[in-house]
Image 1 (tube, rainbow, N blue to C red):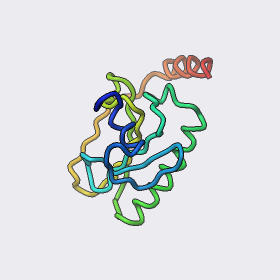
Image 2: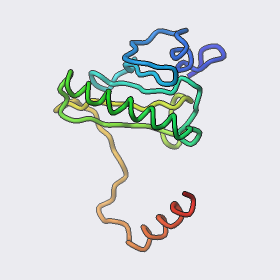
Image 3: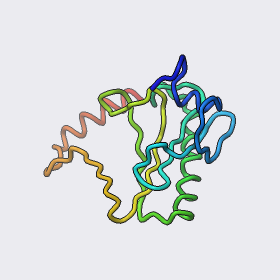
Image 4: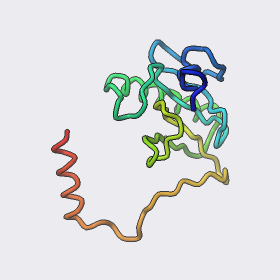
Length: 141
């Protein structure tokens, strides 16, 4: 979603648009989601415009995860959810709707009505297929 020449998350990161900010430093910002799935639904973003995790510098990713862990602990302590999901989407096929990296913390509560569905089959994949896929990924590391 863009407003003017900047995406909405860039506008929030530069304090040109309002948000309920939970914490921030020079590189990272965390805010409550304007359209929360549950109470406490939080977004963590890099302040720099980074579109996907594929474009993310490793050091920025480390800082985002450090912030995420601290926020998850605070959400657990303060809101007392019975569970929690971390969700991050990349590209249209992955369900990304805002072209700025953002990691969702979605506190989960008994009977909250939120449904995450993955395409899990009833049978595990063949071991040889797993080995082939692992080899491709390891070569790219």
